[in-house]
Length: 207
Image (tube, rainbow, N blue to C red):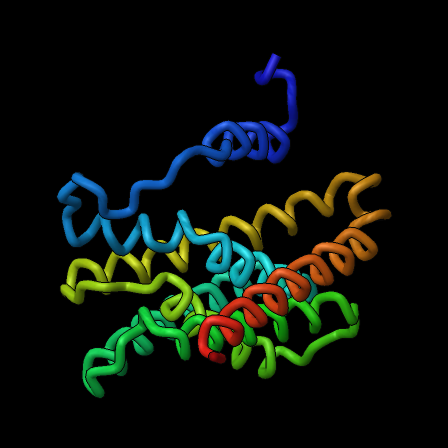
């Protein structure tokens, strides 16, 4: 049955099975390798997924090469943020990191929900900010060069997957017709998620 579906829909089915809700054990009794930490902290964080999906929605107007360039900028932004956090001894596991990443998610979702065209240079800036916010949302607790490298690669792969998937989906007539409205609805959902998590982070800080 799955073999009869278009490749994009088949990929969505596989992802839906993979991302089926289950209990999360980030650290538990499992001694994960440093390179695996960089992957798991990104793909198991709803905020990281929302950030990269929002970036893909904002970058809908870009061509294929520019999509890959924005994904690379996001990966570099994540690695740079991790390096800066280690350099200034700043913990990416605190309330300020949660508030920053939630605010970035809300802003990125708001831009996508607005539906207005964004200049390529601004998209690259948003990609760098999204990468840094992904680093904060991932809440890395251990710093190794393997973790840094795997996190950057994961951000690039996920961002490219969302961007190229949306671009390929536009080839279908019914998707092309409804995608602008769907993108704005998804952007509004991402913005609401960011605002909700921002409110929760502020509530934890306030007495």
